[in-house]
Image (cartoon, rainbow, N blue to C red; front, side, top):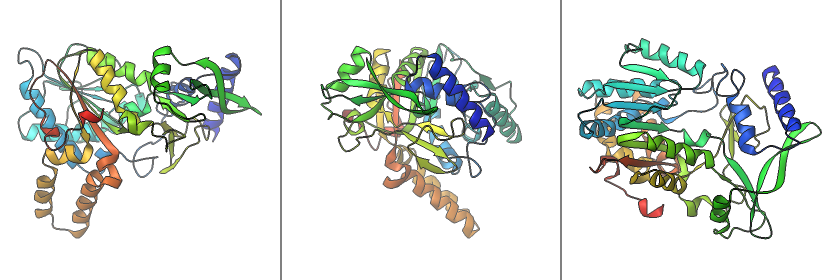
Amino acid sequence: MAHSGQMMETVRRVIRDSGGWIGFDDYMQIVLYTPGSGYYSSGTVKLGDGGDYVTAPMLGSQFAHCLAVQCAEILENVDPEHERVLIEFGAGTGIMAADILDYLGSIQSLPDRYVIVETSADLKERQQSLLKRRGFATGGKVVWTSDLPSAVNGVMLANEVLDAIPFKRFRMARDGVPRELGVGLADGKPCWAISDTHLPQAVSDRIAALGLPAGYQGEVGMLAESWVATVVGMLRCGALLQIDYGFSRDEYYHWDRTDGTLMCHHRHRSHPDPFHLPGLQDITAHVEFSAAAEAGRRAGAVVAGYCTLGSFLISLGLLDRNMALLANIDTTVESLQRSQELKKLTLPHEMGEFFKVLALTRDYTRPLSGFAMQDKRCRL
């Protein structure tokens, strides 16, 4: 609580110094990424039973092993004249990296380098500790960086990355033009505050064209779109695989979703109040995959696939792999754990349809096996 109180003071000071109003993306940048005290940069536990939420790699190894199958296929077919690299953005606990490396090693398809792009010193330390325990020497084949790589020949993985990039919020005015919804102060506490200013013209026109009703509130991930364009621009040959919860544009800005997709996570409870316990809770929004695809195209990429997570994993052999695992399990408890993992990853009301996979490629023309079962690119 003392930590959150200090963060609250930082927020108050920035808002007052900015004339009483800041954009919501600026608020997110402060409470999530301030060095040493922001949610992602502090030493608090964020993932797992003792944290705030659980990600797909933490359910078991099947998610990472299926993803490794797709990575191996791409690595095998990229430019053989250059170093083959597998890059993971924001590796969390490091469990996905360890499971992917385990599988790639078992089929003799390890990349020349596995690069983890991590801005959190605390998470980097946890990742290094786990990978060392799993037998992977750090500093050699597995390396860390806080900078975006360049001229990548291989695969780039972004699992639950876009949802945490600061985004702007808007509210539709009666004249049909979206106004930016930011953060002000009421009785010394952060609160929603509308601005008279418009969003950038291109973004404003895009939202206005949707014909949303007055009072409708939502999000627009301008920084996420810029991130996608930047990362794609660094891809020489290969693919960027983005896995996250989200929708195509027509679903994202549906009239029934009148308050957007903003959601906060604290101690495995979800709620919509971003001003509660600043610095101690995660703040996210769903990903608008249509915008991500458009940003990739503008940067010179090809949209090579878009589908639900469940169909992606099944296309990569999830069901056969699960059956083989169950056949070699002796205990009922472990069997139930594997079955629960399968359900979480595939059922429509779980991650199966809630999460999507978007593939952007450059100088790579082979089909991607993960999209053999389902291709929803027409929905983008």
